[in-house]
Length: 372
Image 1 (cartoon, one colour):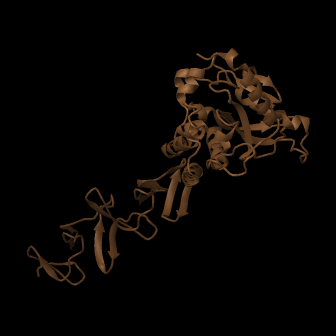
Image 2 (image 1 turned 90 degrees about the vertical axis):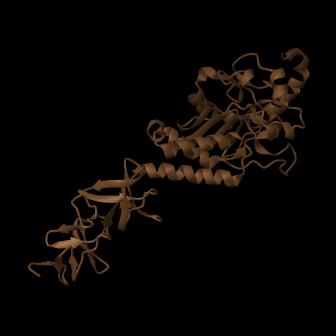
Image 3 (image 1 turned 180 degrees about the vertical axis):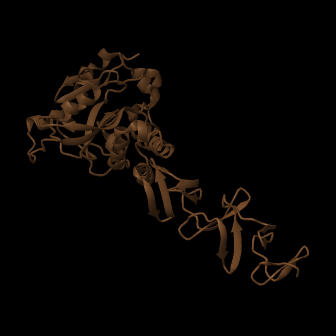
């Protein structure tokens, strides 16, 4: 059980430092360009350092003249859940899932030389469901980053610009070292934490139309992978880049409609889903392989051969392929070992010519010669 009175002097010291990081802009006003009057920013609220994932996953938040980081955050979490002054976020009501759900990532245990661990966090504890400063550690509190950069002034001093990414993050160690990889006063990183703004924006795009997009298996799989990788905090940049590309492709595919020419070949999309297998399009049958690429030429499907012309359309009737004639039934399947009127197709489907077939003779054109 946490004994708050025993830590009061340390907490006062911590509070001074944390507040210094977040409200220095009030004492020294930031000289910034005039803010745009309207637009959208992306906001996420994260508690990865205690292993509880997002409080609020990335979303687009509209802003108007006079908005700042505090007013925008309140739009996401509800003003009744904001604890603190507009210049400084102390806690978020309902932000903690409970002490039993706390898992401090291994990288923080190593970074703090064992000072902050899952065990110490649970022992230190939290008295309620609000997540804020001095919960689980005497170094903990809320910080925010704009476009991947740590912001050294209070949240009410931030003026939004269209397209900005604001990530509100809970720190457990080093006044944000566990979020940025940098120690106070040290220009060299002690751990490598890559920028995740691009994938965060994509996640906000999904959440802007979540019901539709997350119903697409490819999008959901890519989104869930993104959550897992971002939550790990120290995921290598290469893995984040791959996950970003995967999620972007999945989202863009949902927007596709009709024929699309790709590196894999021609593909067809309907309601954002790529056609695979047989597809009737404008009265014509086409076949798309497992990658969604349109097939041409001979295609074996369910032990039957079909012929797709150079446009991908399924042929029926007589077709000439590489100097041989073949007959395709009305369903497109190739005929074999049977008479088609006065003509005979062999076991390989090619039309017989100039030969005897069970006592019947077909000439060089393949036609049965009566009374031969």
